[in-house]
Amino acid sequence: DHRDLHSFPTRRSSDLLDTKNLGASVAEALLERAPQSLGELQPFNGAGIYALYYVGEAPIYAPIAEANLGGQWRWPIYVGKAVPSGARKAMSTGATGRWLFNRLREHAESVQAAENLRVEDFYCRYLVVEDIWIPLGESLLIAKFTPVWNRMLDGFGNHDPGSGRYNGLRPRWDVLHPGRSWAEKCRERPEPAELIASEIEAHLRTAPRPPQHPRILLEVPENPIIDSGEDE
Image 1 (cartoon, one colour):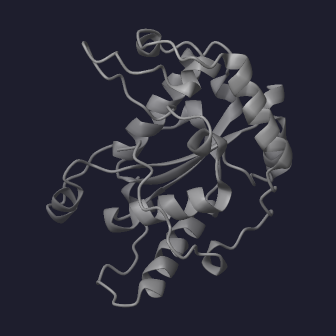
Image 2 (cartoon, rainbow, N blue to C red):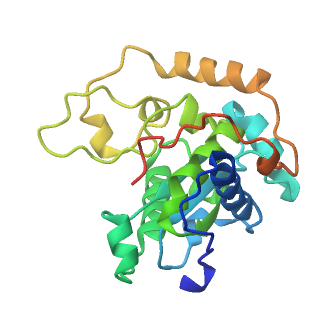
């Protein structure tokens, strides 16, 4: 719904800290949103940022599910963004589209295609926001939560590369969660699923648990990564 659009100052600031703090305000606005079932979203317009949460029973993700059950929603498994092509031009001309909804729907379809995941176990928070704040808001959320599907299991946000472009290695996400038909056409990775799973489990055993009410405004990294390179 376009009424969910969050507006933040759009003038260019000479103070980098002010810019970072405005980006942190966007990230915190996302965290105030009520999570919704990923597989039951209704269409809406706009671009923005989002976080996915897992609450299922897969042993590999038990620490994440534990942090999210009981209404805690402390630890996203993935953070991403959706922006229109030619974003600034589109926004300035008043164009609308379902960029964020379509991206979340693609993720729901990826989960549904996986042989060992259930879309019912995934929830999302999303925020429709002006495109100027989208990359910074996303990067601050990734820096804060280090979601495992962003940092250790590449490929969840990948698209089908298309005919004649399957020479690349199969994404690690698809090795651990097989099912997407296009990924099966890619070259097999040298790492087996068991090795990838053991790396994820070891990481999650020692990773610090996010606090229940994180304050991103107080913890802006000095040089946040501006773009994760996957979601568009």
